[in-house]
Image 1 (cartoon, rainbow, N blue to C red):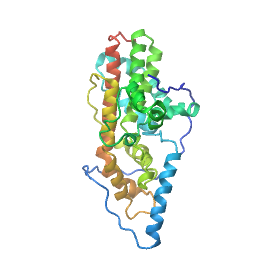
Image 2 (tube, rainbow, N blue to C red):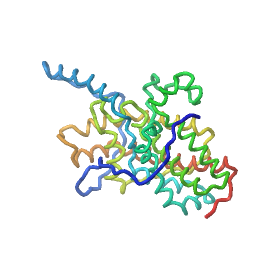
Image 3 (cartoon, rainbow, N blue to C red):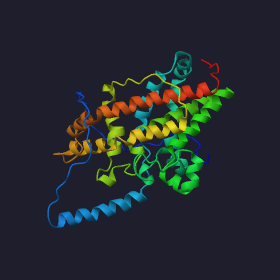
Image 4 (cartoon, rainbow, N blue to C red):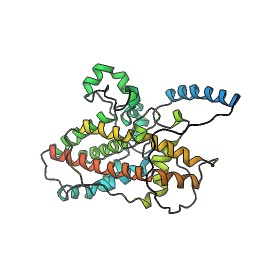
Length: 325
């Protein structure tokens, strides 16, 4: 499988996209609201409407020139998912991962760091489904060689390789465990966890990865990073027990499709939360969190379950070797 891989190196590059904020306030979580389409907008007559239609093509052109976002959940979100994933494992497997928790946490963001050394690594962090038609995007083969034959490698690279990269690292972890290469297995497990968590971020499954196409720039960071940084101490995450994954690559596609289905609700919640606000205030974030918290918690909890399931699957496919504690 000819999927771009990077050499993972430290130290981490700084992330200056974090917003400064006042002390957090605990708020209640209300039920999820479901929406089918964005609200109809009225535009003032005259030049305002004209300017709006000038802005749209400019934003479309700009979005094509900007590399796809790769921040996804942010470092705190990745660590949260990995920590909870360890709790999903059966006791005989959990002991190994629990004993090596600090090593796993140290390496979980290696794929993000690797982009600085190899820009092609960014293609492994997303899949722009809209490039392949309409939901459920059945025009895109899930078998990598078949997809290359149909669309060509350059198009696949440009549109993202995330599900296949999950398949690659699922196999790498299996081989490391089978060979008893425990240090290599720890790094592979952490990197696999990163990609599986990425697949649960809806903004890693779309062309509108940063909200610019819907005139909501930065909504991906507000949803996947800032809400976690502000409110994670209130998260009642309850991941299910890990289970065996029959086909790691096919399951990765299913995860991406499920994540993609929640995009419209998140975008609409962002628009509704901004009403009456001239900036991203505490009131905005309180409203946004209350609207999307059920979805956010669901995605993060499912991510932890999936990470544990991929670890369990690799260990099982490796023949369930005795692990050092």
